[in-house]
Amino acid sequence: NVAGGKQWAPSKLSVKPSLVGVKKLGKVKNNAIFHCGNNTTRFPMAKDYLLAIDNGTQSIRALVFDLEGQLVAKSKVDIEPYFSKQAGWAEQDPQYFWQQLCKACQQLWPMLAFPKSHIKAVALTTQRATLINLDRQGKPLRPAIIWLDQRDTPKNLKGPWKYLIKAAGSEEILRYYRKQAECNWIAENQPNIWRKTHKFVLLSGYHTYQLTGQYADST
Image (cartoon, rainbow, N blue to C red):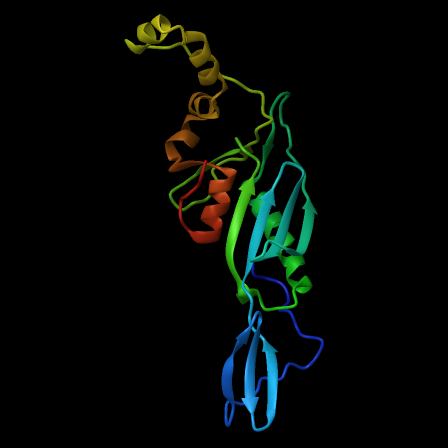
């Protein structure tokens, strides 16, 4: 999983002060001040960090920032953008994207000089218009259709709406988008897959589900 890999091990022994006879006086910036007898000691306060994940078309990057926006560590994994079974098709296994995302994070952990528990939030961005069919268990039903895919499905407008759309001068625009819609191609050419589809999500929605178990996304 994303949290896999070896836990960071400090190169120097970290000494935690005993609380017996120790009085905390306060803190200055990122340090806590302790007083014991005639000695005053400063110990670094635990900092919070943010993890950013970027699943692009050619690579996946994982980056850690502190709360001041400073880059702390980063890793990058190159990926195979797509495979093509037919001319004009561009597809990729959704689980391949997830596995490479995990690999990018696992490469990152040994670079951190603090435990992963200090990472308090994750920001996710992905290539857009890459779509995935999921069943009721959240499992992919077919390869993801990548945004570079060129297949289309000509579909004529039906019902009274076609007259209103034509009157508004939007018939050709809507026809183009209906023809380009991946869901229409799947419904017409792979009806069994479409009937089993519980959620039709973007790649960002798929990763969010893998990370949190919830169907959520932002546009």
